[in-house]
Structure formats: C-alpha cells, structure tokens
Image (cartoon, rainbow, N blue to C red; front, side):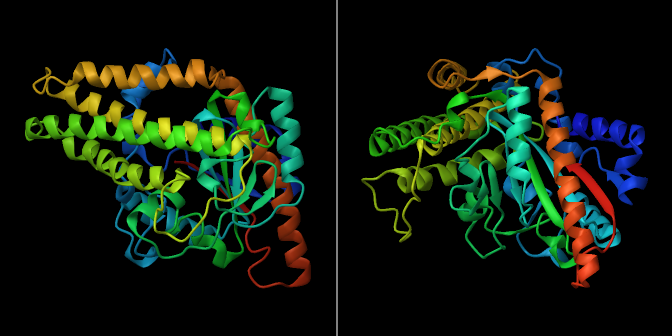
Length: 385
C-alpha cells in the first residue's frame, strides 16, 4: 500500500501547486525501501485479499535484515538500502519524513519523533470520513507516550537486547537518524483489515482474565510451532533461500515466550516493569499481536514446506490448522473486515498531507526563531517499509 500512497501523493503534488511552490517544498518520493522484501510478498499482493492467502504468503525479513533499523549505529549500517536512505536524509535534510506502513489487522495510528499539535484531530476527522478505525492502544506503542488519540511519540533510541529491539524498537533507526537536521519523522500506519474494537477506549471488564487468555494462547501456539520447526528444519538444507525465511521465524519464536510472560498477570517476567494502565483497545491490540506472531510464524513455515516440493516432515496439516485457527479468530472473534485498497491509500494520503502542513508550520516557526536544526531544507522524502 505504501507504494500506491506514494504515487497518489505524487499526483496530488503535481496537481496542486499549494503543495509545492505555495509551501516552498520539494517532494522526494521513494517508492520502496526494501525491494527484496516486496518481491517476496508477491504471492498475496495481487489478490484475492483473504486472510488465509495473506497469512500463507506474507514475508517480512528477520530483524537484522530490515532496512529501517540501526542496531550498531548509522556508521556501521551494512544493508545497501539502509546506507542509501541515510545518505538521502543527510543530503536532503528534510523538515518531514514519512514512513508508510500497512497494519495487517487493527486500526490506523501515527508514530512521531516530534509533536505536531493538531494532528490527532486531523486523523480523527479523516478516519471518520473514510470508515477507518483508529487504534487507541497500539501494541507497538504500549510503553510510548501518547500525543493524542492514535498518535504516539517515538522515544529516543536506547540500548536493549534483541528481544527489546524487535518488540519495542529499542534501537537506533532511520526514523531517528535525521533528528540532527530538525526532521520530524511520521510513521503512518494504515490497516488492511479493520477491527472496530481497537477504537474502544472504555475501561476493560476483566483486564486480567483477557491477559491470561492472550498469554495462554500465545504459549500454546508457540509450543506447537516449535514442534513443527524441529521436525521441519532437518529437511531444509537444500531449500532455496531457506535462511531468509528461517530468520524471521527464529525471531518470532525468540520473542513469543517473553511477551507471554510480560502480558501474564500471574507471571514474573523479571523485568521489574509493569504493564501500563490499559483500556479495552490495549487488550484488543495484544490479542491481535499474539495472533499476528503465531500466524506469521505458521505462514513462513508453510512457505518453507511448499519450497521442499512436498511435505517431508508431515507438518503441513498442522500448519494449515494453525493458520485457519488464527484467521478465524481475527474474522469471527475480533470482527476483522477488509478495507478496500482505495480507502487505505486515501486515508494514508490525507494523514501524510496533514502532517506535511503541520510540520511545515513547525519548520517555518523554527526558521523565524533561528532555532538550530529547524527550517533546514523544505524537502519531504517518502518511503515504504
């Protein structure tokens, strides 16, 4: 979807001089920051758009192969995509950078490196007009400061282990790198399948009961997936590109037990950190996140079995059950419904344009005040993760 949004933004910028000459701005559009990852998703991108087809064909690289992360800092970035993006940021010194993301199941929200007053109201209006649920307790931002409904502040990078890096973005990134230029980064998340309950900010009826169920389900699925992987791994030596599929599988199976302990009110996860106050939206987001982890793992293992040319480990039926159970929970348990691509793109486009207007005001105010690092270059790079 991010590529389609970038093209829509190009059309708007060409057609409306208020977005270019009128704003003294140049739009720099990067259609895809991870072409290899995009290629590996071609199995579902052309449709039909069903949860099962998506789950069995989805790909996201392992953490260390994702271009946005800088686990060893920008000077030691190894991926060519990452180095290219960092060079663009340092050359353009943009006042706004938008990273366009698709949420598989849930709602829309935005993550910001700097506050943009008024953005939450713009998102609320756009979401209501287009029928997009706002995610008011996003799993990705569980411990991050709120800047308004469905708007969250990306915290400064901090050192953490691999699990924290994967689950909490506790690492430097291409989102934070251009802060030195006064750049505002907006990570704009738009859902493919919407879930109305992610917009429910009411107090939960049984917080601990829901958390126990979510944790128990994640542990149960993780045990099943580990058994499948143990049977399948010996048959993968000759499978083309198996390492690229196994890397995210190993990541997911690393973080699942720790997350289950972190969410379980009856388990000490030994982190000395409590869950934040939670509304119904937070609990729904954790339910979706637990299912997402097991579904992605099952889908990647399904692809590995398919690449063997048969079912040498006899695990395909179990993987199909895992995928079907997860999709049924999304659809029947959570009420997930498909949002047409055109509406996804229009929502993301309008949110970017709102951020562009507000960040432009911020940059202009910084230039007038002479504040260092503000109002540097009127350029807006767009890219899709």
